[in-house]
Image: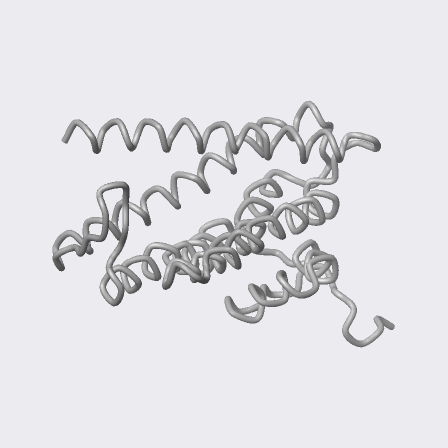
Length: 203
């Protein structure tokens, strides 16, 4: 007999909001539930990743509409059209970041002799991105940005806990897998930011 509340393999995935907040509050226990679930990649992307990844761009758009923005040239306000284009660009970059993390996590899983299954790196990347996406709510107002940074740092803990339970690198390879994945991801994000700024400056 299975104890009440214990994850059972084949369980259906939780709804978006309960899953997101559980990953932030109790990541280890929630990763155990994720590992016991069976979930198609298309469902994970359409019902979890795509809606939640919209949060940072939407929050930024609302914040700019209400309070305006500030750059090196001073305070500025965007037209409604510019707000929409800015939000679309932000959303696209968020999805690009997710795709980058999935690719890196997948490529590094083989050298780490991971045993978590074919879709484990995808599930890891999506669910571990939750902290950063929720932290995007800090884009609503500049005073909230330190909170967003703290959530992004907490995302490292969430990622490490998930890697141990989903990707399951070979014994002794967990720290190397997590460090290599996140460092390469940070480098890719920095390069993307440089390219985007260059393109925008030329337009």
